[in-house]
Image (tube, rainbow, N blue to C red; front, side):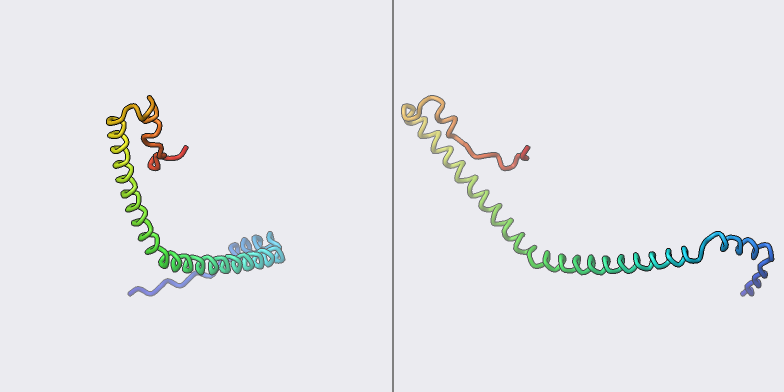
Length: 125
C-alpha cells in the first residue's frame, strides 16, 4: 500500500485569490441565503412527511376497497351478460311476432322499437 502524498501548503497567491472571492460576497447576504435555504428545507421535509403519510393512507384504503371493486365488477359483467341475453331473446320474440302478425305492427314501427338501447361500448363524444 502506498502512503498518500502530503498535501502541499496553499501558496500565498491561492490565499489571496480566495480572500478576494470572499470579499466579493457580503457575509450578511450569505447568512440570509443560508437561513432561507434552512427554512425551505424544513418546509420540504414537512411536505415530504405529509405526502408519505397520505400515500400510506391511500395504499391502506385501496387495499380495503380493491376486493369490493373486483366483486362489484364481476357482478356488473354478469348482469350485462344476463341483460344482453334477455334483449337477444326479446328481439327474437319481437321479430317472430312481427312475422306471425304483420298487421299488428304498422310499417316502420318494428325498426324503431327493435332495439332502442344505447351502445354502452362506444366512447361518448
